[in-house]
Image 1 (tube, one colour):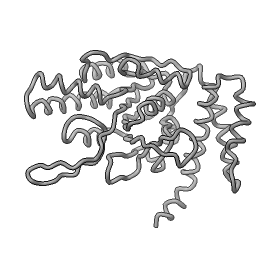
Image 2 (tube, one colour; image 1 turned 120 degrees about the vertical axis):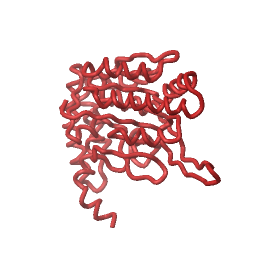
Image 3 (tube, helix red, strand yellow; image 1 turned 135 degrees about the vertical axis):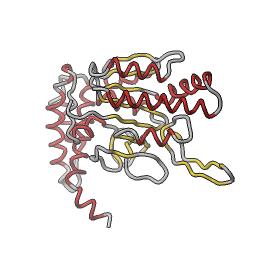
Image 4 (tube, one colour; image 1 turned 180 degrees about the vertical axis):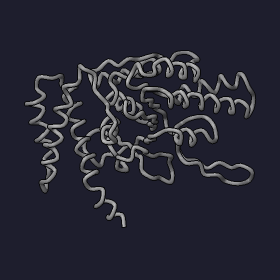
Length: 296
């Protein structure tokens, strides 16, 4: 693996976050609560799942990351917010007051260290904690929105320790799934993209983002056929974009009825979505200078 990425995606579109991880890493190990990966039916794919049940906290996650390191292309900790709540309860049973949060922070650092040392990509999905203002020592303190993790400082510290922190937002301004990754500067939310390849908003497509950053993300053998079609259709969409009124529907309908007719409709839809996202990202790359100048 040429580069290894540790990242986090957070927001209220839980199904979207999880599906994006499945699209990027179909053969990853998903560590998640029971039933969390049922949404993979949308892709006609059955991922590898290790259920998190009962009172399993960060020790379980840390040991799992170490054991699975290098055995899977990626390890996805799904619904990390819920597991973090369990971990805080375990810490409170062993320490009181602020000491419980100190213990929680220590175990979070151990988990991040394991993720950093792993030979697989590691991604966390979380719920969102909205921006809020709190009063402390007679002063009002504004806390930006962040991944929903317990503690005063950890919601901001945790994203600072990863390479990719994307907030999932609802957006209907472009065709397709009405949710996008937001990674650009935002005064109200903690987010960022050290891959440095995405526009401020981009469809939920981790794989295309990582490919654009020069990271090899091979598909499982059963899905390897998709790559040729994604590249070919994305070029057709790029050619169509040069028209005054691009007819993307026509291009995609033709591709679906010809190149993809012999494949599962859900897999065909997967290919079409990847092709469109690749075209969008290439347009962003091609227009970097023009967009930069346009900001002045």
